[in-house]
Length: 93
Image (cartoon, rainbow, N blue to C red; front, side, top):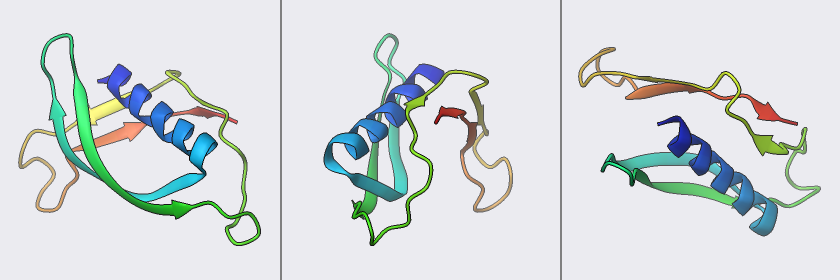
């Protein structure tokens, strides 16, 4: 799961770096846990980053595995409306 999360976040960073697309909402559609071929499918909403129009902060240089945590919940755990997982990721700036 950690490798899949890393690859996904790294892809988002790549898309921002090459196309200046910033996702403001991501919705997980499916996770395929086929042995040796994990993948995920999601949809996202966002816009192209425009300097001067959008607020600029510190640039993310890279995603890291450092202290990465994925806490998955069992179906129904956490009550109605609970997210299926919580993740913790440190990024290099």
